[in-house]
Length: 205
Length: 171
Image (cartoon, rainbow over all chains, first blue to last red; front, side, top):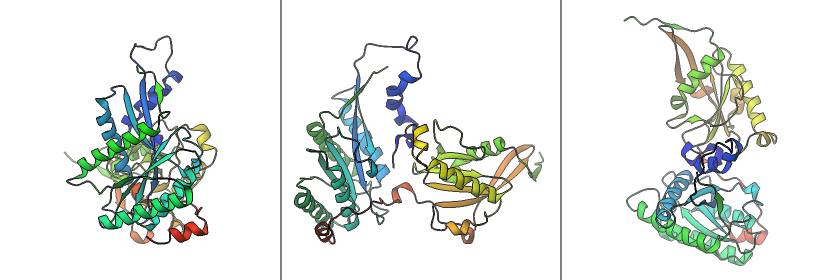
């Protein structure tokens, strides 16, 4: 979905910084003494069903909005850190071995629950990996709760995994900013708790 | 000032390419753009990102619809091959093909269930400058529209055992 090659140009900044040694002559490169920039990569598994409602939060919107929110919220804490979300291709389950926390975004219906579980099952081969599940597209709160419970009970029963429930996020509306901020705080906390090795350093120039 | 407008029978491939690039917004929607750092694929094919950041291949020919379709299919095949990622870093293959031609490409109806579509284009000369008229294709001759990125379903093979199937059969 959101392979780096297809992102808007502004999101390539960190990527360019990380590969600049391939195309900038070391002798002429401008260096400074600033501390290394820390890039936090948050993998996200998209369990988006064919029936994902038009009026639900859309995957690409979530990625852009949550990335921006995480960067805004953490900029005051660590000026030299930045966040990026990266969708996980399911066929590449062997990658992301260093990530302790994975965000799962699922359509709130039976197909979305099944897709979420399938992804979690495939990605759970790494011990101690944690999953946070966010739903969207439920017709009401009760339906969203049923989706969460069905997925959580299945993951517990068959995989022995406790899922972190991140709730339900509707499409952008009056409460979206507050809901997104709460989500970012929780995601940040979970990443901090479970992804201590999930950092890559690049020289900040 | 008098406008001298006439149809152009032949146009250089680089001029047509420039016209297509200039009109990406009209063809693919607001925000459509060329994929950065992508080597040139073909004289008459370009890799783009559509409104939804979905990778889309455009194949165009101002004269021959069949050539536009076949060239597009051949390049789609190459770009989806296992070799492509070896040569292109951070590469993601196009998931849709848009054919731009002066008429419906023969055989396109066979791809009705595939993410292939076409649009009618006509190149004009306006006071010596090239311009392009883009007309939405007739519904009868149009294959299925490419599915926007956020509407593309996640497709995974089932890895659920019978107990899991039972658990996840209903909410």
